[in-house]
Amino acid sequence: MKKINGSQLFTLILITQIFGLLSNLLSGQTRQIYTALIKPPLAPPGWLFGVIWPLLYLLIGMAAYLIYQKPQTAESKIAIRLYWAQLLVNFLWPIVFFRFEWYDLAVGVIILLDVLVAVAVIRFYNVKKIAGYLMVPYLLWILFATYLNIGVALLN
Image 1 (cartoon, rainbow, N blue to C red):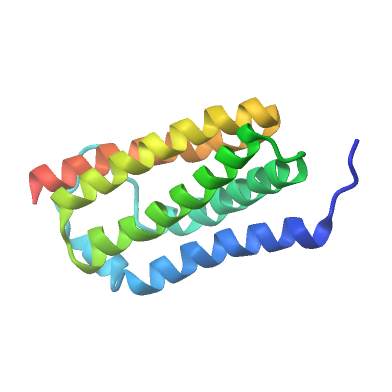
Image 2: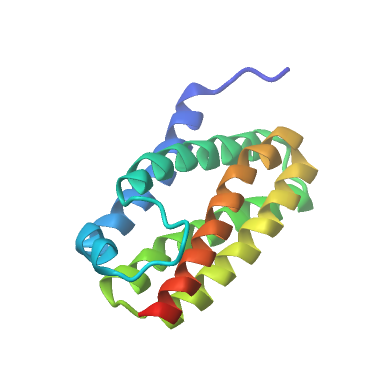
């Protein structure tokens, strides 16, 4: 078993968390906007997002670390590219949704995110099974967020 490189693990978790934090800061008044929206059934309270996202970013960062720890192969290189691609799209979605309130465009962005994360789960799993498993809660959450986004786009 390979020794855990604490500084690399911390760095990847930190990078993932910073992407989320910066995206949130650039998204504007997310709480006020979310509260004012007509939401579909099953929409969670706004405070829940502030609990869920840091946990998901922790899991994503841990999964990326596990991929970076593996020897570089074609599969691991694709997995790393997917990590960065999904992180960028994840960064953009709340800005499109909350800052600009382009709910229809946000549906397209989040569907792209769904696809990237689903493929990342598979690629991560192929490189290191536990890394794929660590991405599953994130995939489930963004699929739920896709439902919410579509609902908001239709109702607002």
